[in-house]
Image 1 (cartoon, rainbow, N blue to C red):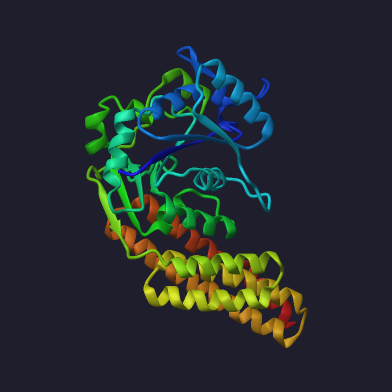
Image 2: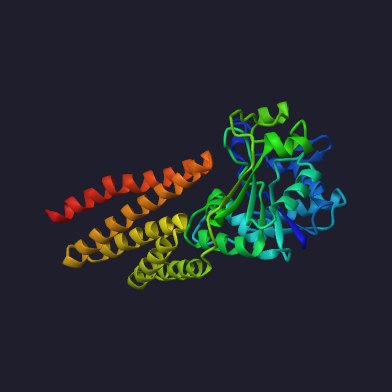
Length: 360
């Protein structure tokens, strides 16, 4: 396989780990078995990748982590500060920062609070990616370990860039946008390599730090699933990025035209996730156009077009969810329906109120 990189994510606030009466603790620097969690994470990936980057959220943290890694004689990890725009947070920021920085063809993402991820498990995940764009571990109840994925960098970089410009911060959107994904069974394939599932000990809270037990996800889905929903619509992703730039520049009319054209093409291709995202963005753009027009006839028409775009987003999210249902991909189906329900509630709630006010 071509060169590999590890992207270690350590830019969060770790709010669930904090004690209310105590000063804030940087979870990545909490010592376990004589080493900070961050050091465990870096050491676990070192033997199976060619590059290691650690993504943090500010310069102060970067400087502190450099000192810690130097103290533990770790010299090959590169520290990066997340590039943020529009005050956007979430995992997508750190993932995108890492993808931009590494030279490797394939990347493994890992949060710094998973200190026992086994190198042989990481190696197996890399080898199993094959022709897919993303591979992510799956529990028998359908839950996904959404921050421990192997990705094909060139494709996923464009996916992450598009999601970031569209202000979608969740890492599971990368899987939905990739269209070609392996959901790898933890209970079947990965337990053979790691019988005690130490790789999946995730320290979110003080209780997790004491127990050091993997989460238990009981359920009927013990086989890996390979989702293959077509080619990546790269031209449309680039157009979505362009539309986002137009929105940022407040060039709403031109943005709405690009989004309409893009949505129509994506629906023709049956790329339901991207079509839904495009339609949802189109709807929000048209609502802003309506608000700019006051009480004019143009405002009314933009509201009508906004409602139509959001209802088309609902339909596309619904079709996306049905695809996941067919392959027993429970978590991704839930995420699609959550987006679908948001669009529905927006149409029935805020949009109806605006239409009612405008008609008086």
